[in-house]
Length: 503
Ligand SMILES: [Zn+2]
Image (cartoon, rainbow, N blue to C red; front, side):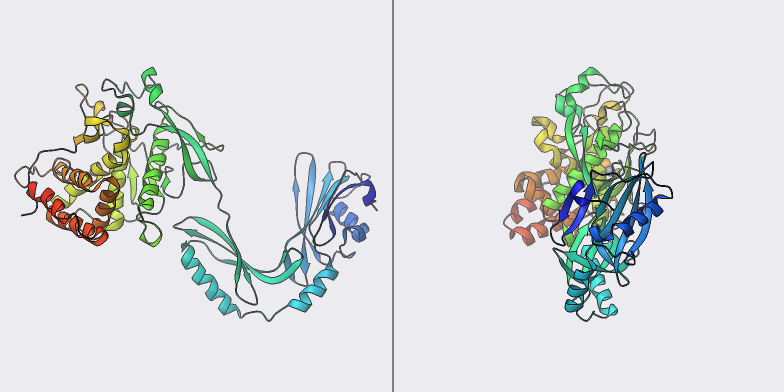
C-alpha cells in the first residue's frame, strides 16, 4: 500500500480523486507490466477511489518507451465507457511503479448522479438524422461514421452521450461530435485535423519585378548572389500534419520527390527543386484567400478545395491546367526559367482552374479560349499590381520570359495591347487573349481593383462553355449592374465598343 502523504499528489477538484501520484517508487516486482499494474491497483483501490475488484476498469493497452511501460485502463459504467476516464500506471524497467495517473470518477458518485438524472434516450434513427444534417453543414462526408455510446463528464456532472467521429472534404476536417443521448443536442464539436502554419521563402511575384532588373539570367537554375535580395519570408498557412505542402487550397504532392519538412520550415533557394513548390503553395493559397475575402466563400466559394500541383512536370516551357475527369490539377514546366519561379505564371494557370470550377468545360470556342488566356493574365496582373511599378504593371511574366533562347525578352504578354476586334484576331489563344486582357485591364481602371475583380469573377457565372467576346462583355455589364446598380454601364460599354467587341 502506498501512503499518499509520502507522495506528491495532484487532486481532481470535481471528483476528489488523486489524479496524479508521483515522487514514490514501489519495490521492484516480477511479471508483465500489466500484471504488476493490476496488482498495484487492487492493493491501492481505496486510496485511488476505484473498485477493488477492478470490474469497472477495462485493460486497454501497454505502450513501451525507452525507460518504462505505460499500462492503460478505461473506466466503464455498466457497459458504457466514460469519456476521458482513464488510469495509467507507469512501470520502469525493473518492475517498479513510479507514477499513477487517475482520471476516473468514483463509482458511488456515478451511481447517484447518473441514475437520478438519466433521461429517456432518443431513438437511434432520430440521432442518425441529426448527425446527417450536421454533416451536410460541415462539408462532404468522406469516411465512415463511427458512433460510440459513452458517459460524458464535465465539472462533476454526467450525461449519456454519443461520441461521433467522421472526416469531411471541402473543407478537409476530422470531426468529433458529442450528442446528448436524451435531447439530441450537439453540445461539443471539434475539428481535430491538425493544421499548422509553416515558414517559407518566395518571390512576389518574381525577381525581375522585385529587383527592378531586366538583366537577370536563368543560368541553369543556379543560385546567383543577385537573387538573394529577391526572396521574401512568408507564412505558409494551414499545413496539414505530415510535413508536406498540403493545405486547404493547394497540395504540391503531385510533384516527384516532393518537399517534406516535419518542422514545417520550407526555406529554399531557386536551385533547390522544392523552391517552386513553396512558390505554388504560397501564391495559390494567397489568391484563394483573396477570392474568399471578396465574398466568394462558403456556398458561394469558387474552387474552395485543395488543387493538386506538380511543379516539375517536364522539360517543356509549358504549364497547364488539366480539366480531365478525376484530374483537375496543375502542372508547371521547367523549360527556360522554371515556370513556377514566376508567380504571374502560377496565378495565370490557377485562373484556368477558377474558370473551370465556375463553368465546367469553359473555353470550347476560339474566343472562349482566348478569354481564358486573357483572364489568367489579368488575374496575375491585378493580384500583383501593388508590387509592380510603372510600366511593369502592364507586363505579364517578365521573369519567365527571360528563359527564352536568343537573349532576354521583355515579358510574355502585355495588358495594354492596341489590338482591335475582329481584324487583329490571329486564331492563337494567347495572342488573341491580349485583346481580352486589355479590356479587363480597362475595367480595372474604371472600377478600381477590388470592384473589378468582384465583377469579373461574378460575370463568369453568367457564361457557358461556348461563349465569345460579346457574351463576356455583356456578362461583365450584367454583373456590375447586379452588384453595384449599373452606375458604370456606360463606361463599361465604351470599353468594349472601342475595342470593336460591342456595337
Ligand atoms: Zn493559359
